[in-house]
Image 1: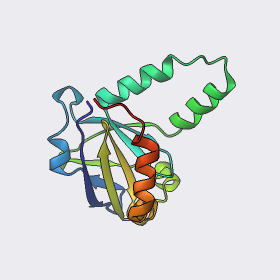
Image 2: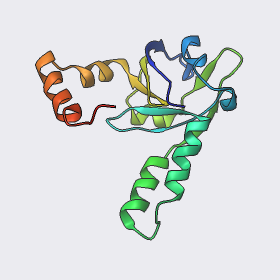
Image 3: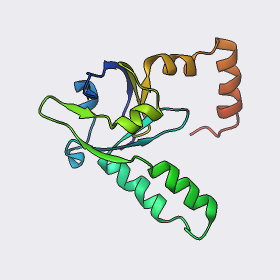
Length: 151
């Protein structure tokens, strides 16, 4: 599923539960059956994969040659803390404490959905990470997208 889209500000309760916004839930496929896998992301965020997307990621990981040290190192780190989650009756997921600690997650979060996954950020860290002026963004856009062929 590549259609996930949106940015959602949510709060985590004292038990570590986060309500998944209904606008995001509506974008999930029926095959996911309200199941997710959450793991470490890059830049100190977490990544929440709908189960069908996780199966694709898992297949890619399983295709790596485990006789190559950098592959083993990557898989170990990426899978460290990976946890299957299911929405509860109130459409919440429980963020594992070790993953909360890894991403410095406090009470206020941002869920940023794109390319079939949802990044889970501490709100302050998210805004700090995406904060760039328009000239910096224009330069980044040119560098990343400037030489891509038109589709």
